[in-house]
Length: 412
Ligand SMILES: Nc1ncnc2c1ncn2[C@@H]1O[C@H](COP(=O)(O)OP(=O)(O)O)[C@@H](O)[C@H]1O
Ligand SMILES: [Mg+2]
View 1: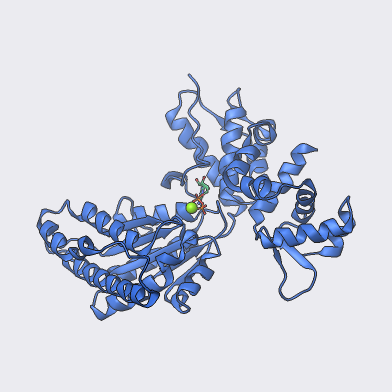
View 2 (view 1 turned 180 degrees about the horizontal axis):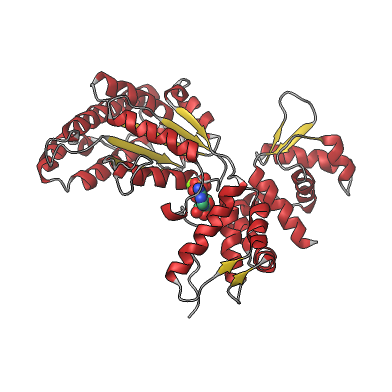
């Protein structure tokens, strides 16, 4: 029987294997507590791809719903609504989705069933907007939908909060809006959250919290949609895990594995350290390196060779990470090996600014190729041009830089 691999490179991490984020969890738990007590807070969570935004959201969702206790040993009882935004999600489709999710979650309570049907009746009347009508008319129709939505939401929340009986037993409603960087213009995300939070206050509904997560560009998207929408959020920026937390991730994975497998697996401290160092604290790198090392190993004790073998081999961790996160930026959007060489040179400085003249010096081909490469890479948003210093560029993401560096190391 093959061993079951406990590491989760392609899923949000289960609570038992979740490491770190103490500050962020404390802050979000504070928000839940505030919201339960009628002083709602909203949060914006940003960070690079694979840094752990969705996993953090998942954990907070479990805490909010009372699936697990919060840090103070208390179980909360919020209704949670999770939306994952795609580039096709628009305002109307998300209102319809929220209506469905709320009915699914609350329909279980017999007493509120008919209340929900009548309160959310407006959703049945929403028509797909005629693309022919002018934008002023469209906007006013959207405003009506938002107004109906906020009103229904406020009524619903007020109907279910309390500790009186089976139908008034909830702490409030928490919205988790993940991958908000995908938001298209027609979602009007910034405008929507800004308007809805204001309307909720007008309707004296104070037990609803919004948590929005996405890549850093989400900030731009929100403020393009409504310039002051950013101000309704407390902003949490998710960073790399500390070396202690990285080790904890590996240890708890090994422990989980030993619960489900007959054959015991151990890991040497050098093996653990190597995963920690190679990953530079990126949770998705940790999970993937650990997963691949676990797979590579055959004698039950994971050591440095297993980590290296699993990481750099064909179909190993680096290939997996590349396919999952960076393949398109590296291979599809960049057709030229010269451009990739420029990226490798830049990756040596991770995502710090680097002078064009330094790149030219290290580049094996002609100077003008570097000029072309920098122009093309900037326009594809793979690298950034320093707005305050001429001739300086950097890679957008540390994770991408790390991957390019390690990938290059394998080729050598
Ligand atoms: N706090 C954490 N502890 C352990 N593993 C984590 C943690 N956060 C994320 N991971 C792992 O890292 C990978 C990426 O996490 P994810 O939450 O999907 O990131 P994001 O949503 O920012 O792209 C997943 O494999 C997940 O299991
Ligand atoms: Mg995510």
